[in-house]
Length: 113
Image (cartoon, rainbow, N blue to C red; front, side, top):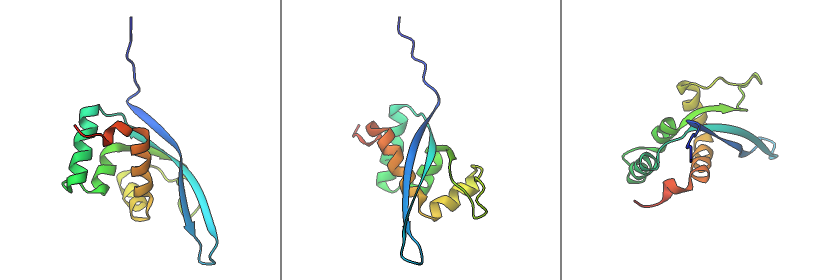
């Protein structure tokens, strides 16, 4: 007997962000992002809508990201995941890192129907 029991969420760990400080020093940091585990049809539909421009990257990210770990605020405390903080993270450039992590985690999402 085969029992298919998948968690509704999956973590992508070690998402890497690099930036240059005002002093010209390169800094690297890592965080984890939790994605909703979508069916293949739904993943491909979202991806196609994103490619066509119907679903901008920011909205795509809101559709697939469920949580994060390791993202801190200016006070050094870990930021609680919510739509508002996700928007701020996207605005600061973490959105592209999250998108890459999604497609690395779910490579079949890129495949043509």
